[in-house]
Image 1 (cartoon, rainbow, N blue to C red):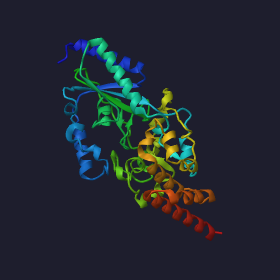
Image 2: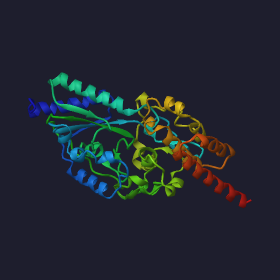
Image 3: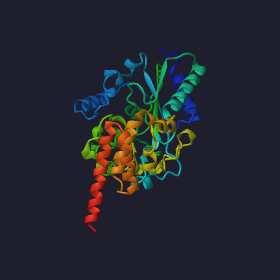
Image 4: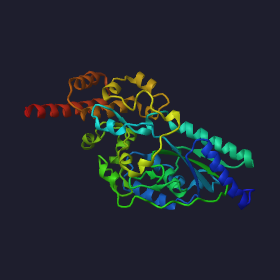
Length: 362
């Protein structure tokens, strides 16, 4: 039970938001632990098989939508967001160039998990300096936490039709983090939704993964296919993936609210290793040693070299039948794993079809 009265808690909530801003979070909100509706939606998605192989979304049972089960004593969640869009980003040009490698904007720089968790820990230390010991635990896309519904309840934005959080003043290019706490702080109010009749995100999705407004079938989502899926990418979806090799930002790039997005002030989130402008052939040439070295500190590293090659092989199959592309695929095939070989063979077949079609047209 908090030693603070209502007036002191209200003053503390204001201070928390000030301290949070000083630590580099663009916005902070406070919500309670009631996630019953989000839990029902999650259970429905699991029952319908829409989450694919992401067993971590359900293996912890009700802890994901009952925060007080995950961290006993929790009565409030402090939800924060941090912008990550690189300045002067030329994502659209990269996406339209079949020879270029498209990587989700969030993964171009250093891994955000440690940075944000450290800042949340610093926020907790600042609170403790002010009021003494209190119960808390920090999360950044880790453990069974429903971060998006919590962000909505805390007033950081609304759930868009693509299931990402949208803020009317900042778009959707931001990370989320949470501080579970036993402090009964005053609550912030959710904001109203402002998607209206716009279906830009639904219309642009290459694989039609947004099966209805606010409903995503992860099994068709390029982010799932390139990051979460460990086995073969379903063949019918491969031609639809274009040059996406790690994640997909198409739905967010189409969202009109992102015209208000501000470039990140965090230097750690700026592109590294030239990943914002890299060619498919350049990245396909990385052996495992080069992959591990050049993705050190990057979220990309967690998919491993095999999936990296698998994804690029598909993208090369969707590019043009240039001699150097065909040569790179053939040169890599003998030493590739069975998984990668399958995707290389598919790519070579695709490029062969293009070449034959072009020859027939004269």
